[in-house]
Length: 243
Image (cartoon, rainbow, N blue to C red; front, side, top):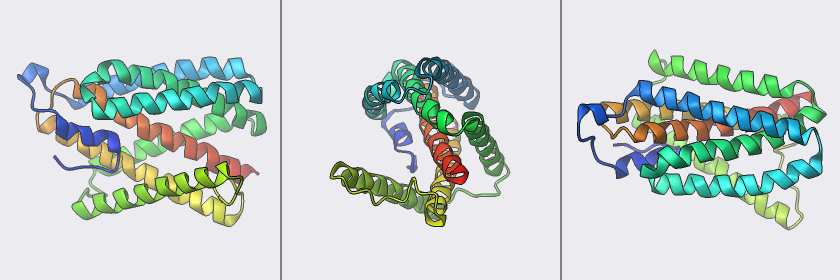
């Protein structure tokens, strides 16, 4: 099966076909599991959001371990997709904690931004699903390559900014409310949205190819990865626009 810019979905190629029709991955099963993971993330996020209550020290204390644990669980899931029935819910829980802390800080500075960011995130996801289903955007090899290249460039940009910040060099326009900063955020949001199209396509191909049912959990996990990224970028963009 072909690769996608979402690194989690590359693991589809590491598993074989289902033993029987009853053990085959379905799109409906993936949707159900995605909704469950989103519910877990929402409950965890809402709980942390209320506990942080705008306290920056508490938020930072929660964010660092959540980010590290989430990264570790994500890497484990990517390399061992068979573990996804257990690791995907853990990832959703940890990411919910992380998003709850980050959202609390944004909400303190920009009241109402959480609802706006969540609404835009799911709105964009819905639009991209329609775009995919109606074939307005056709997932060709060139399209895949373009999104893969753009996604790789963005994460390389993130890495460079993080390294520079460690050495006390703040040169990143990511949090800048200037036209350049807003433009960069819009581009990143666009690339994240296009990743959803690739996710939908790859999950569809996985179901058509008879992937094992365990991959429903993995497909749900991969969608959550992209949605978390899109939500964070929406928060950043809305914060820039309201600055």
